[in-house]
Length: 324
Image (cartoon, rainbow, N blue to C red):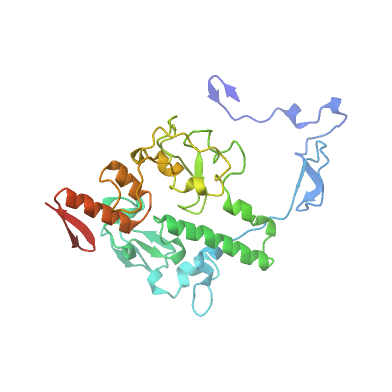
């Protein structure tokens, strides 16, 4: 309740726990669970005050099953649970952790399910984390590795559905827990909704490309500026996805210049190029080539730009460096 300018938790008034005498029902309110409706969906709610719902048996899927922890060896047998794994796993690569002081992996008496380097724990994109070789960033089960990689997140999501499917086939969980093909392939479940774009505007769109789940994004450079700029820019092919192709009007772009990005989504830019060699050496050309998502094409474009500026490119450590 709201008393004296503050929210205070108080017990429900006793009279609210009883049926109203005008309703023709006497006695205590039972909460709506139908008689016999516990773990039995065959009991159909009648709508009466004491029968508004029933529920079936709960299914469960252990995280340890999904991660593969229960498939690890614990001394000639599979591990029974997390504690068994922690104490008895035989894979010595799991018996180490990161030392917070030395920032190095050190031996540990217990098995670790997952640990991440201190440089990467708070920010995967910090300079210190990015400088580490991939094999030195994480320890533990393969399932959890790749915390900072969207592709690994997508792999984990896909693996979860695969495990669900196997459990359904084995009769261990209900098929009702499995999403339909439509659920797995679409993000737009209602209009309006969190993944439904406003007419002509840059959002809100959704994509599964980054982590396998529906993530909000927006198209920049529209006439009406999309206010939620904390959203990331959508992948350039978002309008071609089945969620949006032919289903919603295209956003109205503020210009047809690639540098403003919007026309790269609607495919009607005034500046075009068939290859990196044809792209103009300016912001429009850079944006155009970047939208292709082709590393080789971008390298060729940057080499042209460097040569035009009198810079000499040289390969160093597997990357390109420019020198005047």
